[in-house]
Image 1: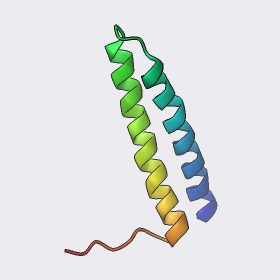
Image 2: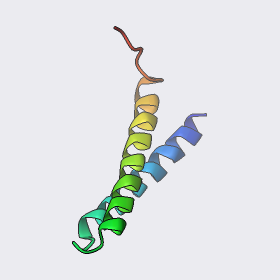
Image 3: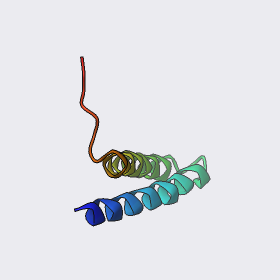
Image 4: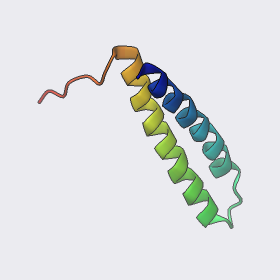
Length: 65
């Protein structure tokens, strides 16, 4: 299971960097391309962060009110 989570982590972070670069390098006139790339980069960031937390701590920390 850890190998699958590690693979998801690597793919997510590479997607974050690739789409983040595309979002930053898009022209001012290409707002649709910029927004799409930014959304995909955000998805990659959050997925990569959750996978990294799962790998580093053995799971997500419990939520406390």
